Amino acid sequence: MREYVDQFSPEVASVVRDVDRRTRTITAANRFELYDKLRAAMGTLWTVDSFVVSLLRSDNVVIFPYSFDEGKHLPPDFHTYGSKGFTAWMVRNRRTYRYRMDNGKILHRGYRFGDSGRLSKDAVIVPLLDQQGHVFGTVAMYAYLPNVYDNEAVAAFEYLVSQLAKNLLTGVRRELGPGSSGDTYSGLLIDLIGDFTDDLQQMTGSIDQIMAGETDDVGKLKRDLSAFQALCRDVNVKAVELIASRSVDAARLMNLLTPKEKTVASLIAHGMTNRDLAGKLSISEATAKTHITRILKKFNVRQRSEIAARIFPMVQFGGAFHLADPQ
Image (cartoon, rainbow, N blue to C red; front, side, top):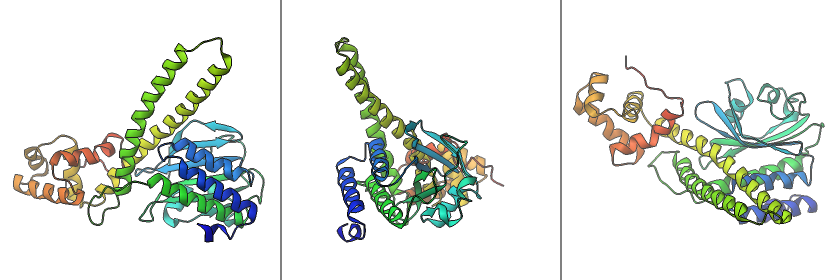
């Protein structure tokens, strides 16, 4: 880090070191605080009118767990994207986008949030990359004035976003077998479920404390409500990230399979027995078992039920792969 940060001016280097140190002390479980610290840090050096974190699902859906526009945090949102839009460009190119590259032409094709009547005049959007170099999201900062973000702003933002990606993926160790790119998302999903459950319990406890407190102590009540508000925001972020991770994980696993194996796996997720599979696909039960054995090996699992468990989120949430009638 030291050699990289030394390229910055003293003021920028100081802020980068500070936010890097602070975010390292924030557990990846606290998603909202991680995103908020990064936005606030960039805002101390450059104008940041809007700030958005996005996560990509496999079925051309973008989820926005964190959005900030002109001093206000916006609720999580999502939308679909096509092959000509900005998100598709980012997935293909896997590199930072700057407004000056095309004067915002590609950017303004995409989704608008906040004050839809105003267009950004400058922007920097950096991809979140997993361990295999795939884009699993983006972090973006926008300004309503032109020429706000110079080369130093871009370099500092790229470094901090890369550290954010590492923080989000820290501790993920689950292996799915040779050639698999799904380990990142499986581990992230497990962490999110545990964190989400813990936070819901903490929210219940916070409500109990507020309800049992002295109502005439206005200062204490405000502090309790402020803490509860922060917890609600973090739970909100985790809820949408949980949906995003489930779909992406299942899709990456499905991409390991042949077309026939995808059909078999989907039928298993829909509750079909081996005999049902054989009848549906007009094959013998022995052939059905052979397909299942290959799927088990590619998913690095031992039991048939684990196939359904791994891909059911994609089926449940309407992912890119749907039940197909074999022809």
